[in-house]
Length: 358
View 1 (tube, rainbow, N blue to C red):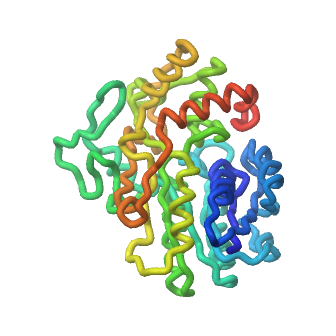
View 2 (cartoon, rainbow, N blue to C red):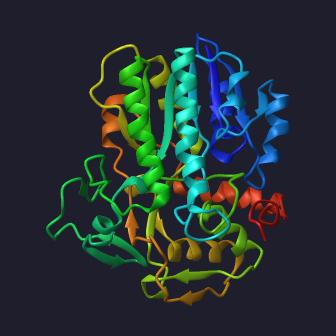
């Protein structure tokens, strides 16, 4: 089986490529990938992939011609995106650029799958869910973290286990979220119209060693590395307390479900699955700071009470559908993720300079 991974030199793409190569079953995988190396730090993954015999092609997915001469593939896993919820409204990326990167590129990949009769797997995001609906959920604070007040009336699609696939996706969801939700719909339409398999995986926060550290995309790596190096940090919004809570999981834990999706031969009414760390792998920024303080000593965290656009107090993914259908659950504990990032940070003193646009 020939497998094309887009964004293969990113954190998620490179991790998935290596784990799939290391866990091949009877059906061998020939893995290759494409990347435009726009993310600072992505070039660092190219050498290891090359040593493994995984060929990396330079290409910009926004340019259909860059995909024309790639080798034939049986499956395409899309791990390429601008993953910042602030993209298009803050920072260097314009609104047109975020749509070109995350939506126009999807059209080019789907056209490739149509021509090659290849299956398509989209790594989507938890940020397709409605921001007002999430912001209006009843919250409690416990042990320095927001948590869902399950004693109050809750809308469909949310419980103490997290947000499920039934939760509303009504706008606003940010330009980033809209670009991914539109990509999901296009992928499902292309698959149904041109008869090739499509799977949509809505991923929560991904974290682990080698993650590029930025506050808007790679928050766990950014926070731990910044704490370790005594760089400035601040809690933004929600009273400046750091109570906002997310769940996290390691991208290597994606490999098992991706393999099952590529091997699947049956019928499924569900093509969209949440994949996340769940309640057991959830944490607040304050709790992460406490963990760092125990490891590295106390470090002053500033507070900025100004709300940040598109921010939400709590987001935990409910992956019950994936657990039921694929027998999938994350295998890497939150403690293990934090420890792994710490070890990597201690071994790479310039990681933030390399990957965070300082």
